[in-house]
Image (cartoon, rainbow, N blue to C red; front, side):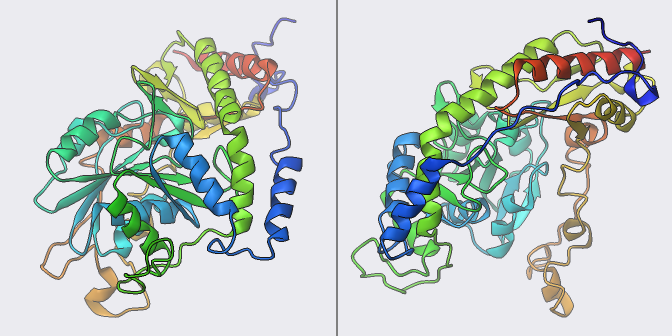
Length: 415
């Protein structure tokens, strides 16, 4: 059937004729594992075996020799920073187009987030990281955003030569690879999230993967109130730690989900590749590209728009896509710089005086302010890019109708 050239927002027929495909995320496999957890008569990881098994599975999955379970992706990044040895007054470089979970651990340790720019892959570059390094730089968080790999090989190699730690934030990038190597296995630590908004889910949860056995002990103890529980007890409560423990219920679901992770992420890759092929050659727009040698798992994607090629704003284009039934929206909210935390720099409002601004104002007089002068590409994409939803449940018809809707809208708005 010939498509209606009249936009749905103007009364035309929608491009999307059926709802997007969905599926059941959890099934009998999770129920069986949960029963196994309950039958242990304990849900504490120290006495049960499911969290330990999940860590063994993660060792196989990541190729990393040591894995620490934890309560969230946020805690995983915090633990990765502990592996890097950050402390008060240190600076940690990270891109601002991420969730606050990427920076909470920095602030909690009294260190300071320093935002570097991204490029049109939405990822940091070695050059953007280098531009932000100072005498205070102790670590870099490389966020592999949206299931696309960042150039972490070059960043990790450069940082290693200078004693700068690298935490890979793989929350949105399960199964993502660079030159055949899984992201999360390049730097000092790889941080993974299993909350409900990731490729696999345990509701909340996470894992940290490291190579160095001493760092493994440091991170494991920090996650468990420094009980030294998995070692020889000689460091029991010798130092500070948090309670970031994973329960046996989370471990049970993680085991079932890890059995499915490859099929899930390959499904995202299949749909993303099909979407990318269908949207090639768009006038004035393109999907964000994957790095050479990269394998993306497309947790979501974005259209990069040349505003000079269209009679309409980015938000008008997004509204027209939504009217066509396309799952799309503005990319403009994917930003930490504009948040109240970084604009007002009030970290702990219940405190009085300078302490409420710490660590964004340091005792040695350093005071950090946040704007877009050092992140021009990030700001341009905030103003012009359109986010596209992707799911491994999408059918061939979903991909085809999404592509048709995008092409229809961009053609209608083209100058």
